[in-house]
Image (cartoon, rainbow over all chains, first blue to last red; front, side):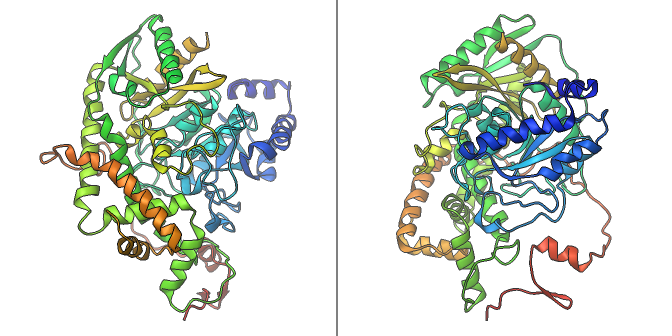
Length: 462
Length: 94
């Protein structure tokens, strides 16, 4: 697959016309989407806007699939939920506006776990997405549709959201690049909120260069998202130190994943001007429990807005006797099982008597985790970890066991807790399935992260 | 840990109606998750401040100016199909 810049070259030279470029993607979707189910709705008109774009624009030739929790004006936006089946977006998300201005177009909306809650895209009200590398297996989640679409060449780039690993874990499972920016660098205006202190928007792409290009376009302060901040450029060093945290190579990791990571580390150790050393992040074991509590708490508050009266739910129903009854019924029938579970868990952890023991305690653990990283980044420039503890698992394997499913995010949630940027790069294959490595940098050190990511990507492609 | 009465109370607080077999399932799921997250109670945190936000981030503020939004946009924003005169219409519930 060509990089976006290579595609631009081909378009400018006339080797391929914009219509031909789109036709390739449309025919791929037509041929494969029946099986893969990555795309929920096609945006033919939006894609054709490529004809009106400036050939010199930085994202000219970038054909996006957009996760279905990001608003594109006038288009359906379901968040994978029955509750929003009939909802149409009233405005463009800031990230969508920015991509449009910079020459990108949109070809489809991608399937996802309901309200971005899940690690397998099995929680969508519109059917499971399959991993294009092995149709019996999950593509990861919650941005599973985006990852599958990029991996299966239905587009050349996608935009997802990441609360605990929802861009990165599916990128690893589908063998593509997935990037979660520093918390606060990309606007969430027009993106459906899940857990607001973690949520970030970022690209899924074929390579690090494309991911960086998209990030450069969508980042920046936005008066419609009150925690956004502009990034200052960081100095990139010629010689870099890479930390490998010993706590990420212990519990419950599949042998194949461990081997692939060790091979990947051995490869970068051979590179010039890369030094690898062990680091320690002692509170890692408490990261997932703390994440579970904070995430569920924020989810229970954020999803209170879906009452079945606003946002276009159209149930056939006899009128309820009281407003309480209407809410109970609409929300009881509208939310899927995982959403119900998390809302109830968050209601519990925020309720009087439990608030201090769960929510406040978890926020304190979050401090400790962020401090672990602060310490580590005094010694090293970037940290290298596995992306996931397992290879892509089979459809149905974990769907009845929420805890096992949540453990799939064990290596990705730390970046959300500490607000760090993290990128997944495919680093090898085992049993014919992709294995991803994760690179983390300090908050707002995207420049350092992308520099390291490009060097590693090159080493692992050799 | 979570009994029948408690799960019913939670479901009411969250405004989510659960049928009986499901409330048993969900109570079990919540139990297993709560048991797992209990792990954090072992960590000493008496001298640790909660991390509610990151030190590098400052609130983005703007002037508090009233903007008029026409009724169509308002209707669209709410995602509600029906309107009457100057009002948005909801299902009758009383």
